[in-house]
Length: 333
Image (tube, rainbow, N blue to C red; front, top):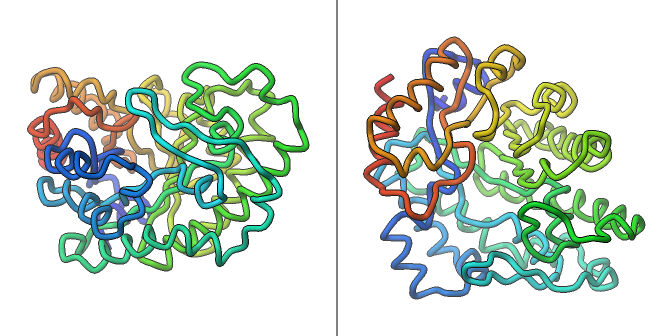
C-alpha cells in the first residue's frame, strides 16, 4: 500500500505523504512549452498523449506520493454540451444553458466526448513513474459546477444578481449534474484513478442556511457513491466557515483545508485525516520562511493522519526549486 493510502486508510500518523494541487501545470517550464504550442485549453485536456505527459511532469522532478490527472472541473459542463472556453488573464467563459440539448445527452455520448481524459488516466496508470503512487481523479462539486454553469464566468467574490431566481432551472441542473458526475467518477476509477478529490471551490460564497441544500446533500450523494466503489474520497470545500459540521454531515475520507483556516482548531475538532493548508504564496518567499511555515503544519499535525498539500493550487510564478525544497522538507520530516 502506498504512503498516501497508509495515511488515509490505516490513519498512520508517522508518515506525511505529499502531493500538490496544480502540481502539473503553469509553474513548470516544460509545461509552458507544451502550452505555447497548444493554446486551446479544452483541446489540450482532451489530448490523451499530452495530458498524460503533463500529469507525469512533476513526478519526473519531485518525489511526490500521487499524480493528479491534468484536466479541469469544467470538462463536465463541456461534456453536457455547454460551450466552455478559457480567456487569457480572465479565466473560464461558459455559453448559455440549453436544457433541451442537455436532456438529449446519455451516458454513452457523455463518456465518448470525455473518453480522452479516461485514456489519459490509463496511460498514467501504465507508466512506471506511478508505481507505488496513487492516481488522483477529480470532479467539481455540484454546487461549484452550478455556479459556473449559471454565472457563466468565475464569480471571484459574488454571484450574478439574479442567480437564485430560477429555482426550477437550479433543481434540474443539480439532478443532471449528480447523474453525470457519477458517470465521470466511475469512468476515472475504471481507467485507473485510485483516489477521487471533490473540489468545491465556491462553497465559501454560500450562507450557512443554504449549505444543506447546495453543498451538504449533493456532495454527500457523491461521497457515498465514491465509497461504494471502494475508493477513498477527499473533499475540498474552500472557504467554508465550519469544517467540523461539513465533516460530520458529508463524511469524506479526508478533508482538505484552505489557507484561511486555523490548523490548530482543525486538529482539535476533526477526527478524520486532514490535507493541505499551506498558503501557496509562501512558495514565492524564501527558503527560511518556507521551512518555518511548513514545519508549523507538520508539527501541528504530528500525531494526526495528515497529507501535506497547499490551501489552493501552486501559483504560476512559483520557482520549481522551491517546490523541490518543500517536497524534500516533508519527506525528511
